[in-house]
Image 1 (cartoon, rainbow, N blue to C red):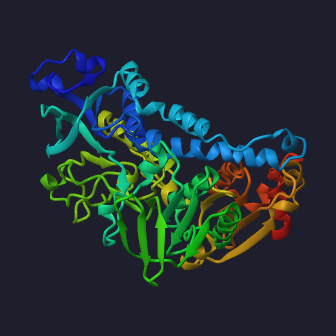
Image 2 (cartoon, helix red, strand yellow):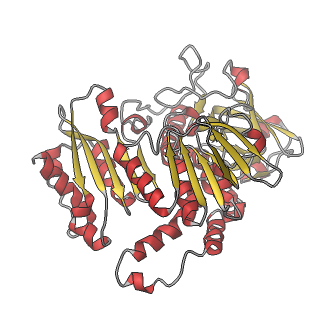
Image 3 (cartoon, rainbow, N blue to C red):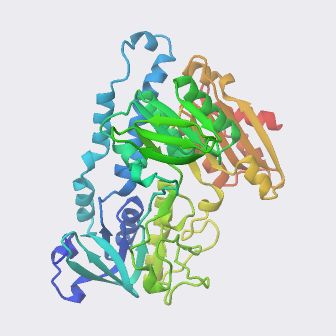
Length: 495
């Protein structure tokens, strides 16, 4: 073999082309690629995955898992301090070294031995290197030594290469060597002063984490904090950051950045104001990892987002799949819903539809069908692990109005729920439910408050199931839990 591989199929292959042929080839071994491969194997097909970095991808090493580890210790400490009895038992401050050590453990110390071993155990071949599509159902893998292995797919190639941080075109920014989400997630030390450009999920979470870890944090949020969420969500996170000691600057726009000889970062705003920091984190969006995967061989633009049909087959500029419909794209790279759980959801649909088409089974591409990703458009759940947590699914009130829907918005103070008062002294939170008045179903739900993440799935089920409000009345929340918010919202609505 000329490429580093694992898996029974890879170990027994020789140099001949037939030995490198699989039913499916997946480019990218993050959570999405892994799940595609797993579904394909369970469907009885052979599969190879190609990975240029670590098996497990962005989520395992530089995003979901390590960032939540950075946030969790401070959240647990805050929770303890809000409950009498537990509060008195807390005798010290956050142990930053211990937090970073736990983060390292959660990220498996940036080694993928365990995840690579899992691929091997289920019969998935792993090829390490840069994968490029060279022709119909053909992928070349170039490893670190420059050796090239050619792979052929009998049925499908799946692009699951994810995204990278987008660096805006700000004079001096690239030369400053700023942090992106990767450096923030994997930092070995906490900077004394951290400036954050952006106000979205990554910016808000990392501002929350590093403020708790001891940094003096300045958030330069041109469009505000969490601008795509319900307004009360951003307002509460902004207030909490300021209460914790961070400076939050809605509307602040960066004009130029430079780093001097002693490492200090100098930031000039469009107002002429100057800000100094030890590190600067840029969290202004994502860009697809499609620049070097061979899109040009298919008449597609390298570096572009990939457009897909309802079963996640890649579409060309004329709106049709490449001949034979053999190319798919799942996860962030198709720009439908840039969240790990939605990517894994797409992966299940992709893996299953490839198996169906390969074996001649019927394809269910109707809305909410087995082989479609309908939830990407109607019921995307998301938790922002800030203080307070923001949990949402479906449409915001503004989005529903923009869509021309006949809606009613129901708001309720989470702090007045009996379960909230037991959970934390002085609990503060808010809940909003968006009702489609024509169908009498929920189409949007947002919660802001401590530990609201675990309440979200009930709302997701209600939206996906299109459960009528008069039936939801019979879903009785246990007392005394924060889930009693469901009863109060329905009562407020008038049922």
